[in-house]
Image 1 (cartoon, rainbow, N blue to C red):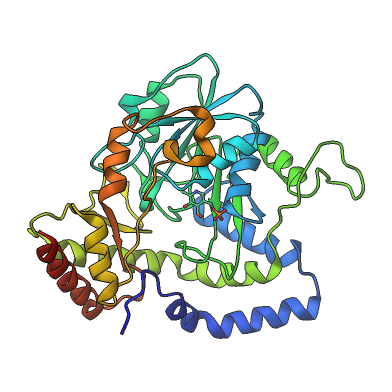
Image 2 (cartoon, rainbow, N blue to C red):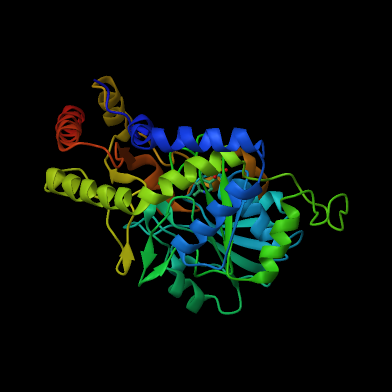
Length: 366
Ligand SMILES: Cc1ncc(COP(=O)(O)O)c(C=O)c1O
């Protein structure tokens, strides 16, 4: 039996009854976009995070674009983003009309390296990414770049905290994703903007809805980026279980730590001091990663790579004229990182099999 990287069917089995009821409620009301169901989810997620405003949007990429636009970032501005993240972080910056400025990651946690931060006169913001489920060093970023706006990409960190502060409560505004495989995932695309600022919230409320808060009045150029009611049903059902599921992810991560301890050639993931990790991904490092991964896949283990090409080497950003060697830590990580199956319902037996196959694969390519 294949062990998938993420088992969404197991999550569905737990919430199926609630989802069916919720879908029936939505179809009876026939209010499919925004509306009460989305409003209820927004309130519940804001409370879970501990932030004043949550605005549901169509996906995480839009959420990031919206926070940039709502905080006044646009043409001529530079926004610092890590080179080691999913492409959407930098796409959002480009779509807002600004220029992404890449920064290398630290070799232990693969988070943005504060010591490597560039500072230019046009640097308006840092879009910090809470990668794999643990938060970026927000306090160190703030100290290193006074006067530069801090924004958060919390797509991979629902429920994570750092020194007691939750992801989505530290920066001026945060974009997050509810892509199905996230810790809190919808049954399709979804995302949200989180902010304490009334002003940013009001701007996003208009921007997500064709630039309008009064029907057929469009004082600003907006977009169509709204969460729909069926997704809100799923998200409300999953949100009730998120804390328990995150705890199950932590237990599974500890189990991998034990199973893989001392395995020569395998670097285990580390949690940075102060971080409460929510283990969106359990990412190890192995030399000859591609060969190891092929062996795992052949043995029925759904391993993945997050991410194989650092952003400065993506064709989409060729105009920024980066070359191999510009961000060596991210480049080396990209060649060695390997994510193992991890999800709330993974069993100790499944994890033992993953660990056993990894042991064999590493020995086989040595
Ligand atoms: C770090 C990060 N940022 C942004 C996104 C974009 O979210 P979406 O796929 O919902 O647009 C994702 C996930 O897909 C992500 O992992």
